Length: 175
Image 1 (cartoon, helix red, strand yellow):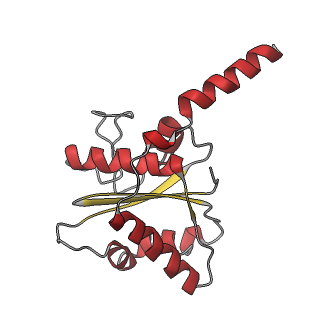
Image 2: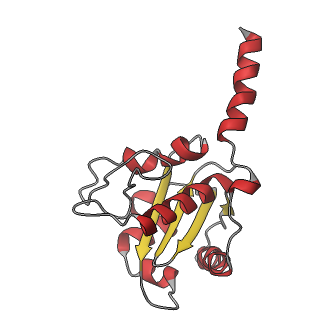
C-alpha cells in the first residue's frame, strides 16, 4: 500500500502542479494590478498577497475563456463555457451554485482549497481595474477583507487581464 501512495503522490504532482512553462508570464498591466492591489491593502494595514502559480493559471484560463466565449443569459462572469479547459459552469447572480466557481482552482490546477474570484469587463483603452472594483461593494470587500471576508486571511493571488476582461483569484493557501 505504501509504494502505491508514493507513486500516486508523485503522479499527482506531475498532473496537477502547474509548471512555470504552463503559466504565461504576467504582462506589465497585470504586474501593475498586482502591485496596486498589494499597495492598497498595505495602506489599509492588511498583508500583501503573494502571487500563486496555481491561481494565476486558473485566472489565465478563465480570462481566455471569457474572451473567447462571453457568458450569456443569466450566466455571469464567474461562469465557464466548457469549451476550453474546465467543465461548463453557469454562475448566477443569486449565488445558488458557488462551488461552480470555488472549485475551479482544484479542478484546473490542483489547488487544495477553494478559490474566490473577482472579475470585471471594461472596454476603455486604459482601465484602472482596482478603481473599478473599489466602486463595487462586493468586489471591494473581497480585496480588503471586509463583510463576509473579514476573517479570511488571503495567502495567494492569481491575476490575468485579457481585454476586455480582468480576473483575480484569491486563496487562503500559498503554493
